[in-house]
Image 1 (cartoon, rainbow, N blue to C red):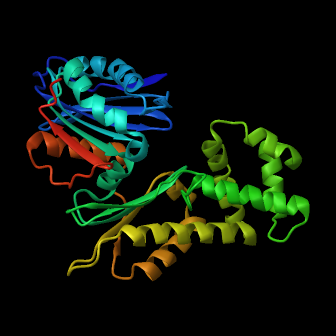
Image 2: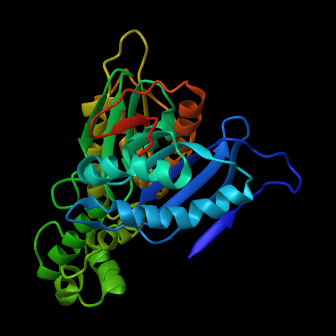
Image 3: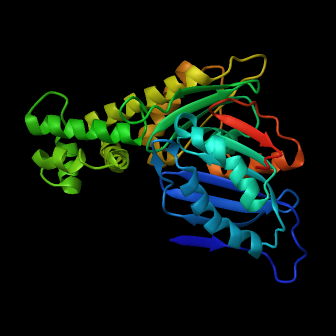
Length: 340
């Protein structure tokens, strides 16, 4: 399934050398093509996520998905060649070895790309939220990761997946809500009858929940799908749900504090981005309190845009020679003259 948008006017002058910006995540690929002078010209998306395997993120599957989107977009936008590409990908930091090794050459061979930046999606989320300014960003969706920079290097906290971390993310909140539901089912302390009713409305009888959840390969997404129910219960005053969201807010603030650069005369910026921000006050109110407690000298700002916006911004800077972000072996690598 694809959705396209190519707003190039008929008869317009050729756009010239262009850029490609990519956001690759659990819901598929989102791509934008454009030029530094005219900005984004066309965009498209695929709903099939890039596969992972023994080598991590599969570069061949990535390229197959990407080329099917990009070639018609570039032709429709009348972009002669795509000289610059920025790819932000979930899992790049820990699963991106093959992608870093093979993608620059593949992009050069197939699209003529000469300059490539390969970034963890946390970095594109950072740039989308704050731009090239010092600070910290918490990206909170199904998982959770925080990144920070003083513009000389990057720091990362969490993002270790739903079994080892992602504390405070959507899967974490959903799992905590389902645990509280099962505590109520058992008659143990810490249970919530309201969350039990919500869990059974979504998943069926509580006793069958392990059998419906454990065999699934998409457990993080399934767990995260219950997070809005926890938020709704918290908004209605359920004390257990409110305690869960307070704990999530504490984890998010701890991650932000771990990566935030020290104030050096100028207050660092802090932003939160990602799908969990849509939970509203039940999460955001305790989060504001926790951030104020742990980062009293930081200035909280609203995220300017999402990870795809960050990839576009990075691509524009890379194309114009104004790219200033620091490199990092796992989080951000730049290859110039990427001919195979």
